[in-house]
Length: 401
Image (tube, rainbow, N blue to C red; front, side):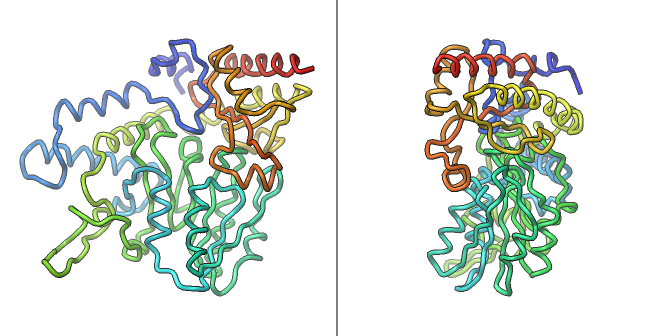
């Protein structure tokens, strides 16, 4: 791994003196990613799949290369399994609205979920689909046997997060997938928080669908990925119909083309997809094992520092080895938004506050009506930065005494 100092040179925003610890919401974007996107705009700005002129062909080749980079990144069998979306939310909704449901079908999800992996299933519940919610331990640990208890002959889909966006806990996806498949249910994995930090292999996980976003892993906003296992590619109805998604059209009927085009109607965010491909390459050059070692070191100092503050409450796994990149906490007697605002205004420390789009987790699992403060680290964060956060939080807490 290049030194943290060298990596930080690729992120000009860090030169302004801010301490950016809101990476679980959205990461910063390095110069090589921006350069690759600008090269597209400057050298071959054209639509793809719409023309035979040289600019369109070149743009198409760059888009195809980006898709191939993503395919390798997640270990997919073919590019047909890699569908570009707007974000993780759109990918999950494509599955929720694209599968053929009938009254009595069962979806099993968890109390850990981001709203994006809960609301689509609750919406199906209004149409007769049964929704079961598995409750984790207070540290955010899921157990495969709890999923097995919720299975039955009508189990159609298990939808779960790979890494909690509040607690940083890692779900045993491989084991849960095995249980689901034994009952004939498919598995959808929300990898929004795992794709930036863990080496993914969809074959190893065994999942049928996997969704993630570019903006949480050094890429631009407006681009995400839905992986669909090859054998399921013709089972989903597209979320959107239009140009590029069809094979034949008459004034009375149409026939859809094959994946991925059938799910990517209209003009794609081409530059953003190219940027995502470059972000994937950037992360692979750093290496996920070295990335993990760096994050564990920084995260341990953050967690232990916050746990040492008497008025601070820290949530999630007590063992830093069992969480990824995220520490959520509160100062007793203070609203999390007030804490986040003080951190910004007094010390230029950027963190997230509130429910983090996970209201049931906060209120029903942790008993927190107002949410929490969330600090999340990435490859460009340093031990000195998290120690500064701990120092300021300790000062805030001390002033409450």
